[in-house]
Image 1 (cartoon, one colour):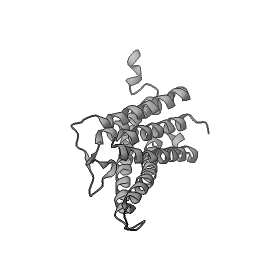
Image 2 (cartoon, one colour):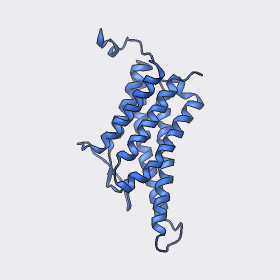
Image 3 (tube, helix red, strand yellow):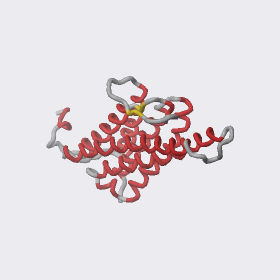
Length: 209
């Protein structure tokens, strides 16, 4: 039957690597684009002055969609154990939240400091450095938790080379926080970060030891 893959007793198995990576990258892109859409869900309120992305909140629905997308990929391709897939969803979403909060905390700490002095233009320099460093660190933190969540059902992700690749992908994509903040367009950071992290997890799922 066409819908047999939805049954609990249907064997989960991985397709070809290219299909897995492309599918998971697409999941990341689509869930990242969701960040630009309106939602009835509550948003994350960011405290203090000079908020990340220059907005008053962060699109919570993008994180939920990303976590659901990764968990569904685990369900279809890795295991039919619902508990493990639920844990994947929870940890990936917590990683997304941790990334947002890490970037915000570092941004506020650096902007509120006296790095580069107090003369004219010093604050702008701190803001730029905070966005770049905050994006890299936050990207790595969020990707690390996402890899940990995916590693619960997928043993392949637990291999050092595989989870390290996921963390590095998140850190590299985190650089996009700077242009996202300048343009005030959240999807500029969410689309590449979620796509690269998801694709890296997909690559790890199919990588031979």
